[in-house]
Length: 148
Image (cartoon, rainbow, N blue to C red; front, top):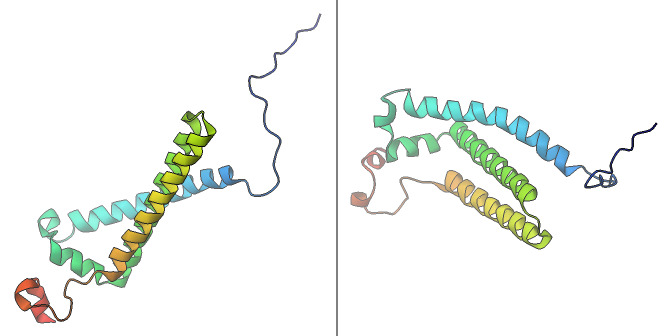
């Protein structure tokens, strides 16, 4: 007497040659998640616990942080890793819940485009931020710019 095993609802697709993007996306989520925890808690600790705490966060505090190359790199890593991590998570959700292939592609491209735009704009803000632009009237500049 033999028992027949039913065929699965969806057959597993044949292994394609080339890069396994799903595997690399999965691995990226794990590694970036660990790095993001360190970056986020470091960011929160410096901004909220060191010095005067949350009361000290103002334009001068941000200007001072963004004038230090260490914090520029820290904030850039935080921005890039968080946006790519979030976009990859959204891609996974779209792939899981979208049945129509055309809609799926449009949504994945929309998420990718928005992540790219936000990464470019955020990076531009981090590296071009100048709290004391030259040639501006002194009454329009923050008080700490007079010391420069």
